[in-house]
Image (cartoon, rainbow, N blue to C red):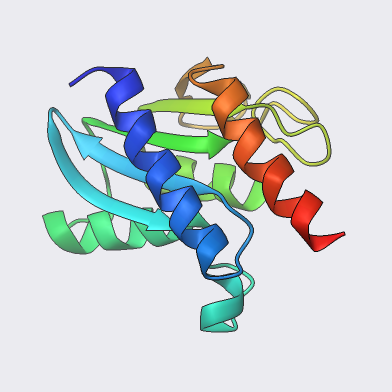
Length: 148
Protein backbone atom coordinates (compact mmCIF):
# COMPACT_ATOMS: atom_id res chain seq x y z
CA UNK A 1 0.00 0.00 0.00
CA UNK A 2 1.10 3.58 -0.65
CA UNK A 3 1.12 6.61 1.63
CA UNK A 4 -2.05 7.76 -0.14
CA UNK A 5 -3.75 4.42 0.56
CA UNK A 6 -2.97 4.65 4.27
CA UNK A 7 -4.05 8.29 4.34
CA UNK A 8 -7.38 7.22 2.80
CA UNK A 9 -7.82 4.91 5.80
CA UNK A 10 -7.12 7.85 8.11
CA UNK A 11 -9.72 9.89 6.22
CA UNK A 12 -12.25 7.09 6.77
CA UNK A 13 -11.56 7.37 10.50
CA UNK A 14 -11.99 11.15 10.33
CA UNK A 15 -15.37 10.74 8.63
CA UNK A 16 -16.48 8.23 11.27
CA UNK A 17 -15.46 10.69 13.98
CA UNK A 18 -17.54 13.40 12.28
CA UNK A 19 -20.57 11.09 12.20
CA UNK A 20 -20.12 10.63 15.95
CA UNK A 21 -20.04 14.40 16.49
CA UNK A 22 -16.29 14.51 17.10
CA UNK A 23 -13.86 16.86 15.35
CA UNK A 24 -13.03 14.82 12.23
CA UNK A 25 -9.41 13.87 12.56
CA UNK A 26 -8.26 10.36 11.78
CA UNK A 27 -5.05 8.43 12.37
CA UNK A 28 -3.63 5.12 11.22
CA UNK A 29 -0.44 3.60 12.61
CA UNK A 30 1.31 1.01 10.47
CA UNK A 31 4.36 -1.20 10.62
CA UNK A 32 5.44 -2.19 7.13
CA UNK A 33 2.14 -2.90 5.38
CA UNK A 34 0.39 -4.03 8.56
CA UNK A 35 -2.13 -1.67 10.17
CA UNK A 36 -1.53 -1.78 13.92
CA UNK A 37 -4.25 0.71 14.86
CA UNK A 38 -6.88 3.03 13.39
CA UNK A 39 -8.63 5.77 15.30
CA UNK A 40 -10.59 8.97 15.11
CA UNK A 41 -10.94 11.67 17.71
CA UNK A 42 -12.82 10.43 20.80
CA UNK A 43 -12.54 13.35 23.21
CA UNK A 44 -16.30 13.83 23.59
CA UNK A 45 -17.19 10.13 23.60
CA UNK A 46 -14.53 9.28 26.16
CA UNK A 47 -14.82 12.54 28.15
CA UNK A 48 -11.06 12.69 27.76
CA UNK A 49 -9.24 15.74 26.41
CA UNK A 50 -6.25 13.53 25.54
CA UNK A 51 -8.26 11.18 23.29
CA UNK A 52 -7.02 12.73 20.06
CA UNK A 53 -6.85 10.32 17.11
CA UNK A 54 -3.06 10.14 17.30
CA UNK A 55 -3.00 9.32 21.02
CA UNK A 56 -5.71 6.67 20.68
CA UNK A 57 -3.86 5.06 17.75
CA UNK A 58 -0.54 5.12 19.64
CA UNK A 59 -2.16 3.50 22.69
CA UNK A 60 -3.81 0.77 20.62
CA UNK A 61 -0.68 0.07 18.56
CA UNK A 62 1.46 -0.14 21.70
CA UNK A 63 -0.89 -2.75 23.10
CA UNK A 64 -0.91 -4.62 19.77
CA UNK A 65 2.90 -4.96 19.72
CA UNK A 66 3.17 -5.19 23.52
CA UNK A 67 5.72 -2.37 23.62
CA UNK A 68 5.56 1.33 24.41
CA UNK A 69 8.22 1.97 21.75
CA UNK A 70 6.88 1.91 18.22
CA UNK A 71 10.08 1.66 16.21
CA UNK A 72 9.70 0.82 12.55
CA UNK A 73 6.25 2.42 12.31
CA UNK A 74 4.61 5.22 10.36
CA UNK A 75 1.77 7.35 11.69
CA UNK A 76 -0.70 8.78 9.19
CA UNK A 77 -2.87 11.67 10.39
CA UNK A 78 -5.31 13.86 8.51
CA UNK A 79 -4.28 17.05 10.35
CA UNK A 80 -0.91 18.31 11.59
CA UNK A 81 -0.53 17.05 15.18
CA UNK A 82 -0.84 19.41 18.15
CA UNK A 83 1.88 19.79 20.81
CA UNK A 84 0.39 17.04 22.99
CA UNK A 85 0.29 14.57 20.12
CA UNK A 86 3.75 15.57 18.92
CA UNK A 87 5.04 14.81 22.41
CA UNK A 88 3.37 11.39 22.36
CA UNK A 89 4.89 10.66 18.96
CA UNK A 90 8.32 11.41 20.40
CA UNK A 91 7.74 9.38 23.57
CA UNK A 92 6.60 6.39 21.49
CA UNK A 93 9.65 6.81 19.21
CA UNK A 94 7.53 6.78 16.07
CA UNK A 95 10.15 7.33 13.36
CA UNK A 96 7.91 8.59 10.55
CA UNK A 97 4.87 10.87 10.35
CA UNK A 98 2.74 11.53 7.29
CA UNK A 99 -0.04 14.09 7.60
CA UNK A 100 -2.57 15.83 5.40
CA UNK A 101 -3.50 19.42 6.18
CA UNK A 102 -1.47 21.97 8.13
CA UNK A 103 -3.07 23.31 11.33
CA UNK A 104 -2.49 27.09 11.45
CA UNK A 105 -4.10 27.33 14.91
CA UNK A 106 -2.05 24.74 16.76
CA UNK A 107 0.12 22.60 14.53
CA UNK A 108 3.25 21.49 16.35
CA UNK A 109 5.17 19.97 13.45
CA UNK A 110 5.90 23.05 11.35
CA UNK A 111 3.05 25.56 11.38
CA UNK A 112 3.13 26.98 14.93
CA UNK A 113 5.90 24.88 16.48
CA UNK A 114 8.58 22.47 15.28
CA UNK A 115 8.50 19.90 18.06
CA UNK A 116 9.33 16.82 16.01
CA UNK A 117 12.55 18.25 14.60
CA UNK A 118 13.85 19.99 17.71
CA UNK A 119 17.54 19.13 18.00
CA UNK A 120 17.41 19.35 21.82
CA UNK A 121 15.17 16.28 21.97
CA UNK A 122 16.52 12.74 21.90
CA UNK A 123 14.25 11.70 19.01
CA UNK A 124 13.43 13.41 15.75
CA UNK A 125 10.73 12.31 13.35
CA UNK A 126 10.93 12.14 9.57
CA UNK A 127 7.87 14.09 8.42
CA UNK A 128 5.99 14.42 5.17
CA UNK A 129 3.18 16.96 4.97
CA UNK A 130 0.48 17.55 2.41
CA UNK A 131 -0.57 14.01 1.52
CA UNK A 132 -4.27 14.34 0.55
CA UNK A 133 -4.22 17.77 2.18
CA UNK A 134 -7.20 19.15 0.26
CA UNK A 135 -9.39 16.20 1.14
CA UNK A 136 -8.28 16.33 4.77
CA UNK A 137 -9.05 20.05 5.00
CA UNK A 138 -12.40 19.54 3.25
CA UNK A 139 -13.58 17.02 5.84
CA UNK A 140 -12.85 19.54 8.60
CA UNK A 141 -14.42 22.46 6.73
CA UNK A 142 -17.63 20.54 6.04
CA UNK A 143 -17.87 19.52 9.69
CA UNK A 144 -17.51 23.07 11.00
CA UNK A 145 -19.78 24.53 8.32
CA UNK A 146 -22.64 22.31 9.50
CA UNK A 147 -22.01 23.39 13.11
CA UNK A 148 -22.42 27.12 12.35
